[in-house]
Length: 274
Image 1 (tube, rainbow, N blue to C red):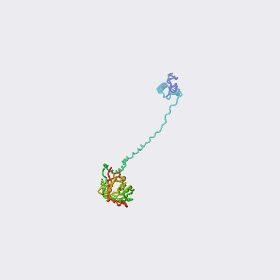
Image 2 (image 1 turned 135 degrees about the horizontal axis):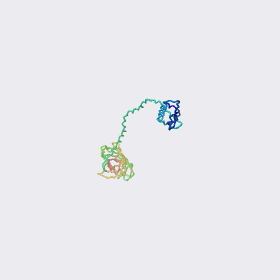
Image 3 (image 1 turned 120 degrees about the vertical axis):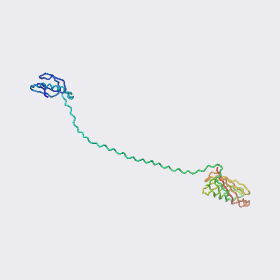
């Protein structure tokens, strides 16, 4: 719309009302602008048109950018158009969970076999007979031969027990032995401290030590009783009671002359728990 004839319209940014010269001498609202409209020449409808134009301008709200400064800052630049491309995005592949591996049953270590327990012999009461051997035989040699007066003599003998009875069923049933001893002896007292080594029928062995025995006479026979201990091997620690019975007593003639060089007789042995 053009301003009415005879009016000059200046537009400024922002503003308050000011008087603009014209044919009607009315006041209009001044706005900040850098443009000036001039309409030369009279026109009968200019007054009406000018009034409508002024009313339109006065009712139009002033933009905020036009009120900032009198110099008129340019309106803010419209943001540049941006091209937005919609790209279909494939959903990220979810890694498949590995199949559950069945847990192997833990291998239990095999228990080591229990060590074999050797059977222990039962505890026996003191005085219990462990082994009895009877009807044995022995042959011995004296060096030098025995005489009426005592002298240092060495005894060497061998013997056997053909029949033995043990307290347990697995015990030996027989045995062979050797005897050695040294000490003063005579035809009247031939008992010496001795050591015997016995080999049993089951292969086991026993070593026995006897002190000086006791000589006795029984029905015209000379009997020697020995008491000692089993010091080694089978039945170790048990009490040993042995004896020897001469077949024939030495004659006085032999004792006064050349002496008695050997002797033989019956033997026996008994082992007792202590």
